[in-house]
Amino acid sequence: MRFSYLWDMKIFEEDNAILKMLSEAVSEGLVIVDASQTIVSTNKAAEEMFGYTGKELIGQHLDILIPKNYHHSHHTYVDEFITDADKRKMGHGSDLYGVRKDGSIFPVEAGLNPFKIKTNIFVMALVVDITKRKEQEKRILDLNSDLEKRIKIRTKELEKTVEELECEIIKRTEAEKKIKQALKREKELNELKTKFLSMVSHEFKTPLSGILTSTILLGKYQLTEQQDKRDKHIRTISEKVHYLNNILNDFLSIERLDTGKENYKMTTFKLSKVINEVVYNANMLLKSGQNIYFPPEVDDYQVTMDEKILELSLSNLVHNAIKYSPENTPIEIDFEKNNSHLTIHVKDYGIGIPIDAQKNIFSRYFRAENALHNQGTGIGLNIVQGHLKNLGGTISFKSEENKGSIFTLNIPMNCSS
Image 1: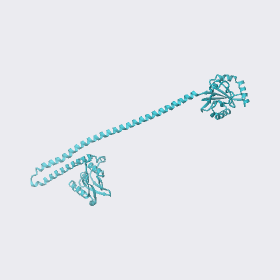
Image 2 (image 1 turned 60 degrees about the horizontal axis):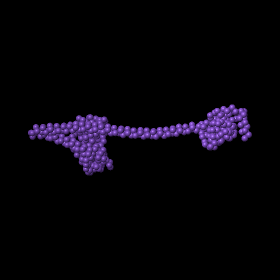
Image 3 (image 1 turned 135 degrees about the horizontal axis):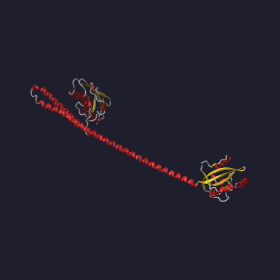
Image 4 (image 1 turned 135 degrees about the vertical axis):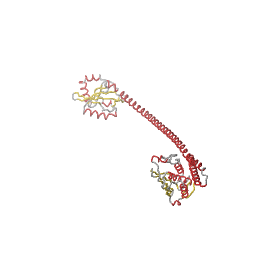
């Protein structure tokens, strides 16, 4: 092996004096090895790069310039390179490292150039110390990493700001919605006040005018044979006063419902007691040919509830059925019960409720367009609904315009206030 190296050196020195001269002019480190990877020539730049002087590297195996943990892969690579000789960069993009005389390791870039002298194969390696480049690359990577971190932090800050803005927008939207709702309620309240004043004016003025007229006429009928006429006007006065009294009671009932001052008195009674009272009072309001029908087995039903509230609720439905139905039509009351609830249906064949008005039928002071020519305050159904809700009951309806309505009371068999 030593003989082979000396022979290679002799050939190299004899035939490559010019190459040696040129290698010293190259700024990159130049290392030439033979087929056995023995160093046969270096230039001054390579010696300075690896920390050697003079001829210290000549005759040394190339491993002297390579970190120990790269020796095995380097041998395999150089052998393959010599077998398939071609000019190329060493490492194919992998990180390469050299080792100095003092043992320090540094990154390098190496280009391999194969050549022959006579029959001998040599490889010239042009080596560049890329420590500064690697430092710059690391600095760039560090800067990029720092920038990415800053971007992430800034992105999080922006996301937080966006979330805060979205929350603020939601809060403002909700505030605007509440303001709009408040304005809407205020508008509705003003409309209700206007309707109330208009209704009170109309509903009180008409009965009072009737009372005044009947009172004046009573004074004109002084003869005994005019008693029938006097009785007629006395009935008119009584009916008008009764009507006004009911309106005032409705207003008082609304006030108690709104303030929560309504006190319920729960008693157990037969349903027939309330039905008979309601029907008796309603008979005085019936139009020509109208009749009220209800099942005879009403005596079998017993209820625990506020008797006055049940009478008020049922009276309201029966009176409405009479008022909004034509002559010669029936008013039908029917019942259903189970272990927990009593259901009462009041059916008429009257004007019915228009579809567009049905959603507001329980609203206070509301009256459908087709009902405006009849007397009414628009608060009866609202009061009934309020009382039943307090007692755990419900009121509902089905209606078709010009065909009639069915109103349904659903009442617990044993109410508790």
